[in-house]
Length: 88
Image (cartoon, rainbow, N blue to C red; front, top):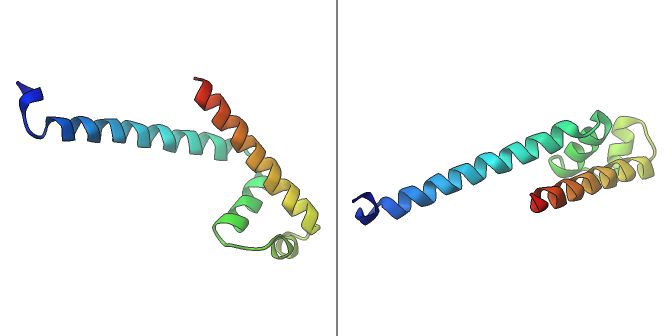
């Protein structure tokens, strides 16, 4: 009788979305936690603080190309993790 209820599909959809959101959060949390600290810092500064690689270099006392490399390595790890997730 529940499937005939007008809200049954909505409840089912919310349940699926909630599970997907938890799964996505776990994925991002696992990826973020697996990154070396030096890459996490660069990703944070670049993504959330909208800093340039030159600015990041100044903040961290490293060359700008090193900041860019750390960012690129982190994104490579993200791509690899997403591929693995798709395969499962």
